Length: 177
Image 1 (cartoon, one colour):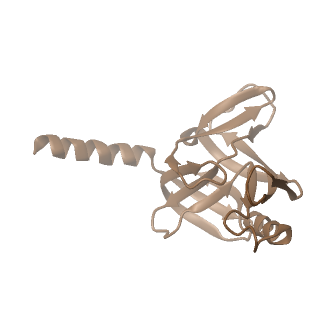
Image 2 (image 1 turned 180 degrees about the horizontal axis):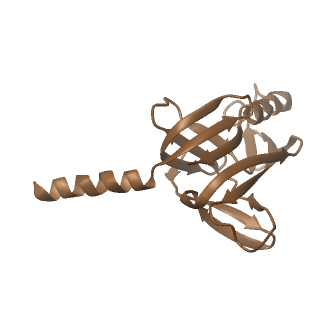
Image 3 (image 1 turned 45 degrees about the vertical axis):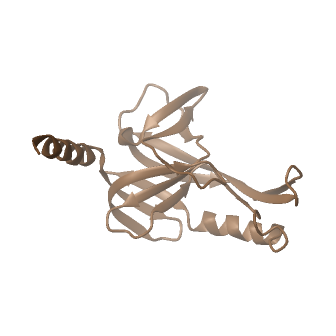
């Protein structure tokens, strides 16, 4: 019984240490504030999510792996146009549309370099906020959708609208408190 109590106490304390309060501002103006209880990530076009505490970034020519606990804020800077292509490796041929984005990270402790820290992680991140029914999805580097499963029904205009919708409703800024 003591071991179970000790385990639960350690689990509770560790979850409190890793949980961080944040304010997420979406591009559509909506703000979501609360405690982040879990961050998950999944490769583009994948359904397998894993819990994560890190994100890949670059500062100049240096590649970085930053812990979310070491980040003060993440802010959207710009995005490219939507580009579309088809992949003949699939039967029927699968169509994709994508858009790259640029997000800067402000670390809690600034380094010597004056170059901005840019996110280069092309996974989809899901921020689970305490009290929110659905996680907040974040495409920090690249939004990509395909017509997989709907090859005969979805064409480039549909995919382009989906990418633009994901971009419009994406994250503008996250401030970790």
